[in-house]
Image (cartoon, rainbow, N blue to C red):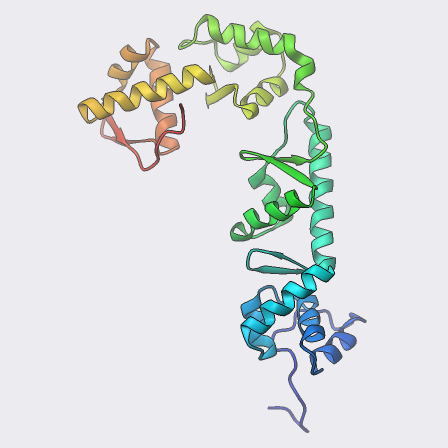
Length: 282
């Protein structure tokens, strides 16, 4: 109820009282035409067709039709169920590009930035993130490679370090299941941590634990061996896996703890059984 009468045109405002654009937006919300009302509500922060329908007291099919028209005209952007005003979307895309650009400068050897890290920096809800990335990719702003996101024009400089890469891979190949620790690996190959991190991101090397790195093909083989023992015997222990893998007890334990952590296996007493996730190796 209002003192002296009046009309409620917006139920859940989040604008600043001093924002000079608000009076004009409220006037649009009070109008009769659905297009300006939908546009104004999106500018005021309404972010879905269902919420727009409730706020504006318009049928949801009519709201969706109007949103499609406004998107073609360039006034809004839709990512799944979420609706963005052009201004908010431009700000998000710009912040994303700036964040990725800085990351590429700081990590030139890496193919991109972990997607989850970028999402957190941009403060996008997890349920919206896949759709947001899809639109950015279609607009030519970014490209995706598995869990990594990069600017569309970014090229990793890892190829220029081919000799260094070969030395790392050679050291790991010399003792495939009992490789030197991370620190000793860097020393033996004569490279720094940035190169090793880039190889992990590219999937050529797998970081099992802080001190254990394996070539991808070796890692995949050991995962398959652990799962094969479980499927044959119903479980696997450290000694059984150590013997099958041809590694040390220290590394066998680290590997099984890694499989526990990614839920491929589950520890039951001194043994491991199948976990809730299927292995992703070949």
